[in-house]
Length: 154
Image (cartoon, rainbow, N blue to C red):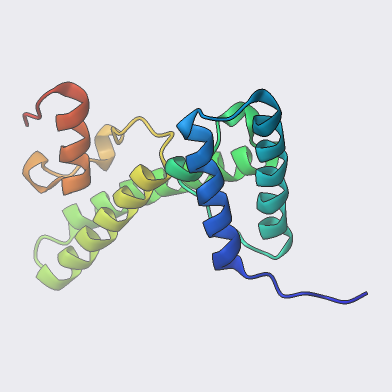
């Protein structure tokens, strides 16, 4: 059996293109079925090549069309990221007297929240113990609530 190296970036580009085509709504029913089959096939290729990332909501098809293994991976990753938010918020609160440590916790918090919003399928609201003071909440959080609530007030 000849093993081929998967060009992950190319496959991801293909998947992104297919998701955009799906969202355009310009496909006939037969073309939609064909696109879904190719999309799931390419997603499975990634999985079989050891890819463990997530596409993010902009590059996914509707959940009813995604394989169960992908939905489970996404849910598990969101749970993990939510736990990390709580850990980083707690660390930030405990590190009042160590500015460099506090800055590290804050950077990790921002990065984690950005990843949650990139993945999507998240409420946009961390648990109470996972909040930082409102004036320190990341831009992605404030932008989300401004867009989805019409305004953002602390």
